[in-house]
Image 1 (cartoon, helix red, strand yellow):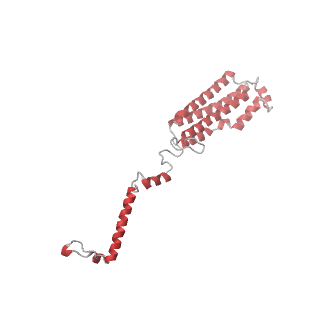
Image 2: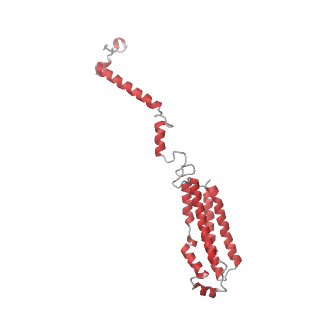
Image 3: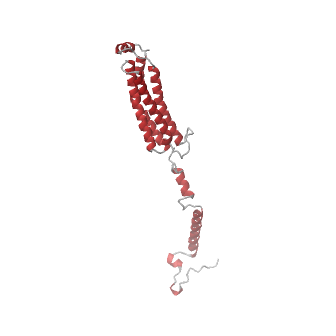
Length: 229
């Protein structure tokens, strides 16, 4: 093997590199080979985009660890479909609609119990109340079993819908307010229904109370579209 000149072109002041580093010719060759290998490795990594934050290895790692790497909130309207096959927007709509239907169902059940039965006076109402099969006793039992006047399940539905969609904006707040009004008017309707049975309220009063509940639920249902769009 030809002997390598370890003295760079520094004239008389040049000092042999092996003397400065304290290494022999064979050691110098090993160091140069190692440096060359490192340079080649860095070039390969750069070509693959390893030093680019917008792609390559870095982007792939970020995509696997960040649940929102697709640009949408987890389970949100722009995210992938959930276990039930629904996107965040569809899931939110399903939750809000189910809540409206829940209160509408309670209202319908109560109306069936009341029907058009009312008693001549409070004494007749009290006598009928002792019969468990009478509309008077049935309405009382319904109020207790359904927790109609204290049911605030719409709040949980609204929170779950906001979480599923990934947003909680003014339209969803409006839905919550309309549902609160529906719950309050439904409680008022029940009280009016009892008064109707006792002959303390007229049919017109009962119809007016029922109309408010119907309007409230219709408003809440109409709020769902804007709330999840």
